[in-house]
Amino acid sequence: MQVQQQPIALAYPIGGLVKSPHGEVTGLLLPYVMEYNAVVETEKMVRISQAFNVNSDGLSDKEAALAASKAVLTLLGEIGLPTKLTEIGIKEEDIPEIAEKTLQIDRLIRNNPRMPTQHSLEELLRKAL
Image 1 (tube, rainbow, N blue to C red):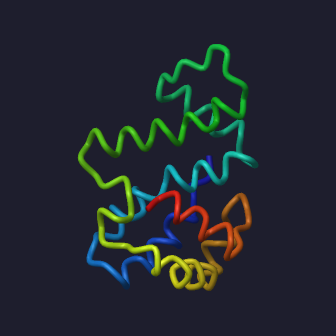
Image 2 (tube, one colour):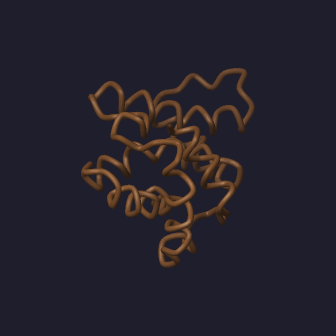
């Protein structure tokens, strides 16, 4: 299964704004990126849900795929890691710059299963606020 590259790319410009460890920022962003990518990686996300023992009885594939991102978000909270960008000092006004700088990290962005845009990254980051 391909590693999600977009949280890694997003973590670089965030690291320039706040003093949070790169891995922590990457982990924080992972569930939001998983939700974004679930549209094109449904089968993989369903398998992740299964690995987390998510009860998918009665769920559509799309719902089961989205449950994977929720399971990862829950795990982050359970182990005491931040789950929101505001917890590490990111503000609404930082979002356009973060999205713009992220799109410039082509080596990571081009490998993401779903090609992001300035708008989609800003939307993702707002969900993570």
